[in-house]
Length: 320
Image (cartoon, rainbow, N blue to C red; front, side):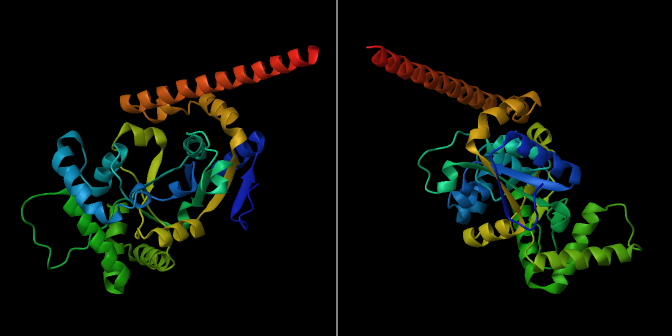
């Protein structure tokens, strides 16, 4: 079983991998991210070097796409944007390690990746949720300067949430109000008299922020894809690439899955109902999956045919 005193476990056995993931399920309360190459541990907007365009991208998406989405808070809004290809700071995680494994194995390994491990391994990052910050929504702290112009905007709501977070990180008094709002979001029917629980929550989460723990947002299950993927989001409160990479790596454990396990594990996952047609139930994703599967099957058949041809040629040479 995984030794939590070590940061990384390399696995090249199907049975060991299945046992490890089942053990983590039985332990409970872990969240997972599966990815194929090292840089995919970072959000798309960081990988694409477009962090400085974040707000402009969301404003434009809202302007032209709002009629196509059903969202009433910034996270749902951003999850729609990300689903259809817009770079965001949201990073997909799942409560199910086998779903994370599916996404890790999604693409075949390259042979010439810049990072040597990317040629050999698939990756699963995971951590225990209770050790980190877990909000239902992004809290907003109202200030006297907040003046409504009468026009509701999801992008403006997101900006307020970002500014609230930054203010809380830099001011203990604001942090207390910020965490009070987060607590009320998670416990909407709890009365103020539960001050002991509230104080404990504030003290605990404040310490986590100070120690740069990860922040997870409970997805609102606003679309079928999130439901099927048992998803939630990591929400970085920094999108500086080096700082964020370090924050993720320090706060998570890593399983490296050898590439030779891709085909047998994909077959195993398929028998469990974990495949593209269930996890990504929309036509554009289905078309992408169909194309990928057909191409890979053709490549595999060609490889088998070539190997047989080489064997037959060798046999003929020997017989001569």
